[in-house]
Length: 385
Image (cartoon, rainbow, N blue to C red):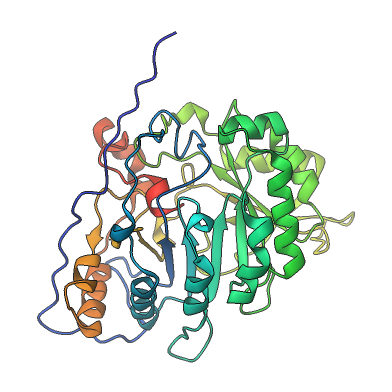
């Protein structure tokens, strides 16, 4: 059997220098990029570490015991994160999602959550504050997260079969412990956003030939629980996951498979720029039964949603990325630690977003093999999904 060769490109090199515009750019909350897309969603990675070794994200062949993780001093402090977040909120951000790596590995994460929960939009509204986790530490931390001000969580879970799940996380972690974490989150109320709508979600990355047989068991398990199960197409993020198109199971096939056993009806998007296509479980009359809940499908490979993308990503050590598939970040940390004023940093953020034209998923099929292979592309474990 041939040895698998995984190219590794360290993204933690100096990011693109961020100039401060000569003319300040006022924060009006109505910032738009070159394609007219607003800035409403900020995803913040709080650690580059994870205790799982899922092969589509942090394969063990690369992220082994000798992997050089970022030193603590390189990470943005909670105060730096909160300062930066406040400037993004002034430009229109309404939702902040904490990611990793595994964000619950960041020591005292509850302190950061409390700081972010205190932020308000220009019209005085609380932020939609959420977190994505693998669930391994959720059972013991759910109450503290809720008390700190976190509103909801999204848990990554790629199957219910224990053998499949242990194989996919590649650290022999039992699925029962993740299910306990989901139950704990639901019990403490980590399932509702600032507007009172249900928001506890479970994300399943579907990889053809690996865990696609778990689709129906997952749908059966979460139907009627108040938890939204979302199926995500296996994506070509980064350079280390060995992505191949033939391992992608199109979302349309997922919906067809579930609908054959558990009838579905399509639902309207929950918000502008929503990445997930929503499908509700139907009653005997063919209408959506809210008590049965819904699923979502995220078709980032087969149905690009670039035209509505309103998300920015802040890496663990302060680089701003404008696309999940970006190859280079803008170094905000240098401004934060270099004496720049809030007005300077806010103007720099505005200028970066106003120049944004990223739409990788729409262009994927027309890119050259070198461009599409993931070379010089940031890893998902570095900026979150």
